[in-house]
Amino acid sequence: MATEDHSGAASVMHVRCPDRLPEETFRQVLEQCAELSPLVQALPPTAALVELRGALRYHGADARRLAEVLRVRTLSRLGVDVRVGIGPTITVAATASGQIDAPGGVLAVDPGQVAGWLGPLPVKALHGIGPKQAAVLREYGVHYVGLLAAVPPATVQRLLGGKAGRIAADRARGFDPRPVAPRALPASASVRHTFDEHTLDGATVRAALLVLVVQLGQVLRGRGQVARGPTLALRFAGGTLWEKTRRLPEASAHDDDLRTMAYRLIDAAGLQRGRLTALVLQGEDLVDAGQVAEQISFDQAREDRLVAEAVSDRIRKRFGPRAIGPAATFRHAS
Image (cartoon, rainbow, N blue to C red; front, side, top):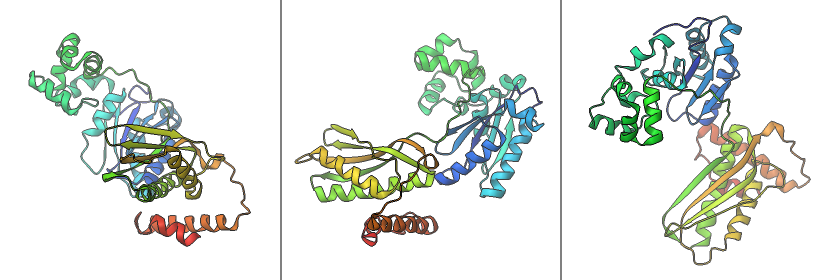
């Protein structure tokens, strides 16, 4: 819509990737963003914020030009097209990226154009306005962002609630003081299994837990991260929740280590007659795998399992996550 000069006023870039993007590819998109600016905030599973204020002068280009460079790089290097919105605030940039038709494109909004650009948009298009909030506003005749901006903030607060109404009124006027907070992928990762029926069968529970162990291991290794400890949460019929965390002797993403600790956790739960409805296994306190020195094991059986794990990862990466099951992974490694 408009290009930005080197003053950096409209310097927030909101990047939207295609839906259902594999996590490893999302990490690679984040790396492409980091080549333009070190201030990248991951918004899993498929979006990111980039602060370009300091990068504009460094690259000698305006924000739109850098966004186009990002698109070219993600397309040529990763085969992924992205939608990039640019604005003076997170809200404006994210709203702009949401107005771009798939598969990709760039839309930049200069500071002086914010009010005129936001005004005609339907309220549901304003970033941060959920479907229920939009429905309430439309019920009272507030169909467009410009109308929302014209309504007294106190009235919006009565309609949407105190904090939510205040935020909505501010953002409709283009006001959003939040900075881009550099952040990589989350410091935790979780996988879940929900039982079709309430279950008392210990063998069934442990089989489901084994599947979660393999899934969590794949997520961590795909991210290039290791966990310092797993958390196991058990949900029982009636809504009762049991949760416990144990620290690993050494941070790891290997199925072998995660399985051993997960089984200790399930044993500590002392299920007996508890009727389970769901399991959640979470890797906690994640760090980059490159920051952790992996000790050489003199246990040949373990080394064989680690080799089998690496082979299984390559098979799943090539043929899909269900190409090889968890039971086969441990059986062939033994």
